[in-house]
Image (cartoon, rainbow, N blue to C red):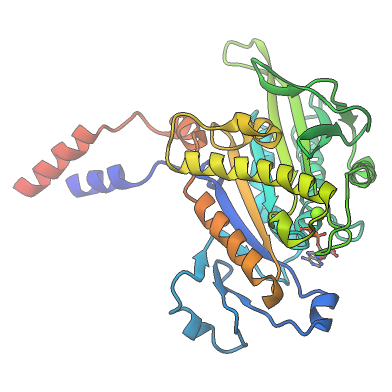
Length: 384
Ligand code: ADP
Ligand code: MG
């Protein structure tokens, strides 16, 4: 009997995937591009078992077994998507659980990280034929709302903003830069459009228009690349009755973030405007990496204030938020350095601890079984 009890104590409290104690980190490999093929590039990434990523400068189809022995070039993530993965698959694995959590009044965020041209915008926004995470999340949200409430008490608001050159702009209503203010609820972009959404159909058009408003500058790496960070915030508000039958308002927020290219500005262009841009992009992404480092090391002070991006992401990194990172990579050996850099950061992000787990598992855990109970049982077992 004691053995059974001990086994019970040793089972981890019920945890859903989203309440893992750390950021969920995924990698998505995109197909080889036409230009890359024309330049005679070879594939240097191999994804095995939907989890393991092998990176090499001299990959051919059959030598991944050998590559397993190359230290430092093998990475494991929560899931890794090969270039054949569909948008729906990526959405279901990375974000669907967060949508469910948002409907329970929790915050969640998904951000795409990677070099320019690696597939961040494709993953987040996608195309009309193959809509990405942003659109699929909203579609799923409306489906779930329809399924669970006949009284229509859920209200969905969207806002879409960009951080470009340390300036925050409203993508749904372009105009003057927005000022960030801190209040009790967190960081607020004053005057940001809160678009009330009623159905999925309007959303793709809205987002595409928004994306069109993004500040884009041609760079040598990719002519259509965006040098700005785009953040879609989906806020779901609804009324429920609590245990005392009082009506309470619940709010859940989902942030979907398409980061600017993570490559160094110097690698693309040297001209004045660009290097100014580069400095700011670096500042935001540097600030992001400092925050990741501070979170990994469990520091008390997290330097969110160092950039607009990290200020906006304050409630989306660590804290009680469910956070998902999708690292986008190209298969081409021409992007080897950037891919290695991206995988390095993604690997590091796995170490971030969040509070979401504590908070959520408190609710579902049975009465806390203390360490002393466990020790007592162990002692008894030893006696036997
Ligand atoms: P980023 O936003 O990271 O700069 P993009 O999302 O714009 O990169 O992707 C660069 C190019 O590759 C685009 O033409 C895009 O359509 C294409 N692409 C990216 N990911 C995929 C994918 N998974 N499947 C097909 N095409 C993709
Ligand atoms: Mg992009």
